[in-house]
Image (cartoon, rainbow, N blue to C red; front, side):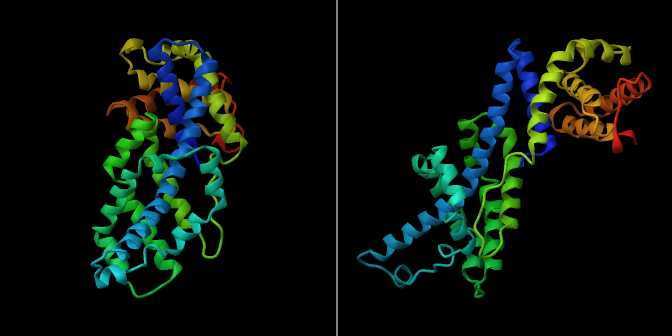
Length: 312
């Protein structure tokens, strides 16, 4: 499921896109924001579905090899450990996965089967595959460990697959690392003799509402926030502050004022961490200093009123 930090990243990207395009249609931009988050679930499903499609292709290759006129002993008596993998078989039988793929018409691996071939070829040439095929023990535990390693070592880092995803949807570029972690967690949680069920996109309704509230309130109040930022940065001209830094500071201010249950320090730390990935090398120190000043001033002026842990 999407976490609060990745929600903040998606909101940041949408606010930045609005600014760069000089677009003030907040309703349309919010719809696109929610659509991009929804499409992230497609990426999650495609990665899980890819495991099944690679297994299917491996089974087809074995079936074709048995029909060779000059079939070898290896062709006639192949190692079927991978095509019998218990975890992938459970996923292949998942009604949850099948229903989502059908309803959302995810036909990627039918239309672009060459990527399935690329992954299968990489897998079968790997030491991971050879070691697994030679393993005598036949258990769900061994099969599960192999699938997790298969995903982490072969699928997740594959550059051609990453380029394919980027071509399909530009916003997936930033979603790939998060989704890879999500897939790994889903595989790790799967238990023997239980049906595979896809994860959920949002933890709860509060997280889903957090997307809209953070985006709307930041966009609607950003002009007034600029004056507050100017007051706290007297040695900086506003146009000298990096665009992303300015957006992150405004989003943090929105959280200070409008989200009473989120502790001040949590908000500051979150935006510091995001700045390390998306802004300049010195941004985290600048943002920390500005937000520390603003939070103290706002608290003194009673503009920040936190409840529970937020007071600490």
